[in-house]
Every structure is written in structure tokens, then in C-alpha cells.
Amino acid sequence: MHISPIGLFTANRTEQRKSIFNNNVTPIKTRQTLTGDTVSFKQSSIKDTIEMQHERNIEKYKVYADIFFDTLGDVADELSEFGVSFDRDYAKLNPIKSANSVSSKIARSGSFDVPDLIRTTLFVENPYDKSLIYEKFLPAMEKRGYILAKANGKPDIDFRLDEIGEPQASGYEDIQMRFVQKNIKNNKIKHELIILFGPNYANAKHLESEKVYSILRQFKEIHMDTNDAPIGSPAFKAKRYMELVKTQVQNKISKKLYDNAKNKDFYKIDDISPIYFTDENKKLMKNYFAALLDRTKDYYREKRNSAKSSEIAIIQLRKDEKDDLALIHYINDMLRETVKYFERNPQ
Image (cartoon, rainbow, N blue to C red; front, top):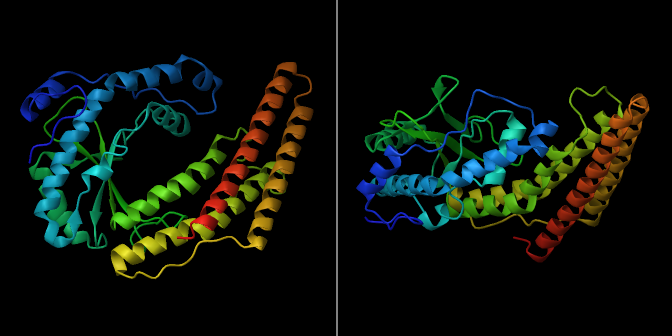
């Protein structure tokens, strides 16, 4: 089956492969590591350089993705009797990690190795059947030139399923794996593949990502250092309130979304559990955020007192506090909008 190439690349598939494989993609150096809270990363040219480098490579990444999609489509057709399917239209929604997401991931992880520059989704009705993955799917991919990448010396595959591996705190389940092309020695771009139960689960993932995950992950951008905070300290309590907010939202929204979708795709059950927040739930969330704001102020007050001999440190602490308080208010506002959304759309 012929699929038209993406963007400016109009040559046939063979010529595309020659063009890409004979022209180096500008590599992101991996020898260097950094921490995401360094001022030099957030404010200097490092972040800009990474993003510009990514943008220069974007059309080549699109061609790699297009060829990967062709392969997955062929494999899905071959294994369709086993409940394997590939929705190319869904895959094309977000096949390349954005430049900003790349730089943010590097900042958070401290590593320049970004394993999901190219990513897509495959549907398998019963992903718990590991024999299907290992005995049919992976050999079919290898026959077409794709093998699992290595992570810490082992094949890069992770079963994040109930009773097989570790599902996420949100209740989300999948199989995650990264491929490289076995015949390419240089520029082994990793292609991330996520295996889900089916289209309803994919829709739930998209909705949960937009309405919950993308909001909660903003807590990671807070400057306040809560790592190894002494028990009873403002940082310790602030971290606990953030965890309580996450737990409340994940239990009331995320887990129900994923359970409902899994019921449809895996168990073939149409009944759903309605998603809503009671007045008591809303009051509890309001109290959590009020306490989080107070503990954040306490944290920075203590920090300023201990740094009173350094004017530069105090200026920076005041800036960090202002940023953190604004971000907490933003998260609170966005979660209130999420609650309103599900009141209008109870699922």
C-alpha cells in the first residue's frame, strides 16, 4: 500500500530511505548531563540550541515516522486475526515530540537521550498475551528491519499492565517499547511504540492527558525543593498536599476514564462509571490548595531568613516564590475547569 510522503519529501519510498540514511540527522550530544533547575539551562542558549537543533531535523523525523507507520500498518494487517490494528489517522495526530517538550524532558531528566522523538500507538485487544508480543509481533517487526532498542543493556520494553509490571498511579495501562532500525549504524533514532487496548482507551488517554496529566505535571515545575524534606517542615507538608491533590483528581477522574475505556475495548462492556465531583470533593480540593499556598509561603520565609546575609539569594528566592505561587494558582484554576468540563460531560 502506497502512502504519500509527508512535507517536502515527494520522492518514492526507496529514494526517501536513501536520502535519509545517507544524510546525517544533527545529533544531540549525549556525553553531557545537567540538572533541570540550573539557571544556565532555563535561561541561556542551551535550551534554545536544543530546540533549534530539533527544528532543523523535524522534516527528517517526519519521514522516519512515515516509514515506521507503513511498517506498523503492514504488521497490523498481518496480525489482524489476533486483534492487532493500527489507526494511521490517530497516529498522525502527534508523531513527533515538539521542540519545547524535548528541551523540557532533557531539563527534567538531566539526560540528552530522548527516547521518544518519534512515537505512535498500536491497538492490541489483549496486550496481556505476552506470547503474541514476543512470538508474533516482535518477529514481524524484525523481519521488516526494526528491533528493540537497548536500555541498560536489556531490550527496551516495559509492560505497564495490571498484574504484569506496574500500571501508573492514574490507573493507566500500556506496553511501552522503543525500536531502532537494525541496519542503520549511525543516528539510531528511537521510535517509541505504545500498545493500548483499543480506540476507546486511546480517546481516554487523550482526554486524561489534556484535562488531568498535563495540569498535574506542572507541579514538577515548582522551584521549591521538596526532596528529602524533614518531616513536619513546610516543604514536607507542601509535598504532601500536592500528593493529596493528585490522588483526589486521579481517583475521581483518571481511573474512571481508563476503567470505562478498558471495559469497552477489553471486556466489551458498555456500562460506565460516571465522573463527577461532589460539593464535599470540591471543598476538600479548595482546602488542599489553600494549605499548599500557605506552606509554600512558609517555606520561602524560612529560606529568606537563612539567606539574609545574601541580597542576591533573597532576590532570587522572592522571584522563585512569586513564580511558585502563580503556578499553584494556575494549577488550581485549571483543575476547576476540568471539574466543570466533566460536570458538562459526565462520560
